[in-house]
Length: 140
Image (tube, rainbow, N blue to C red; front, side, top):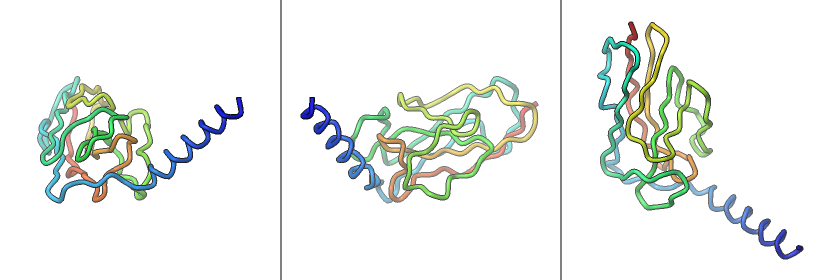
């Protein structure tokens, strides 16, 4: 029993130490929103398609060089501290940990902002961070 606890403790410690080093991103990596276009007027449901250049998509938990998965920020700013995993906040920060490249949202009528942040296998933004331009849409 003591060996199991020791092994589990060492594993958690090594993961914690490893998580302190953010995954690197290539210099020309780029994430962007394909659709809808900036300043578009749309109706519900809103389909949002994600684009990525210079890197590949990998599900959360899959550690591959130059890869990650999308996080969609809705009506919120990119967190100031990008050395920590992105928090999942309902209707604000949506994780696509299975490697999805699009989603369908139902948003209240009005003006909304959308922005993507690529996270590594532990949901931590890369170094340097791969962040899209923020777009604004109007939902009828």
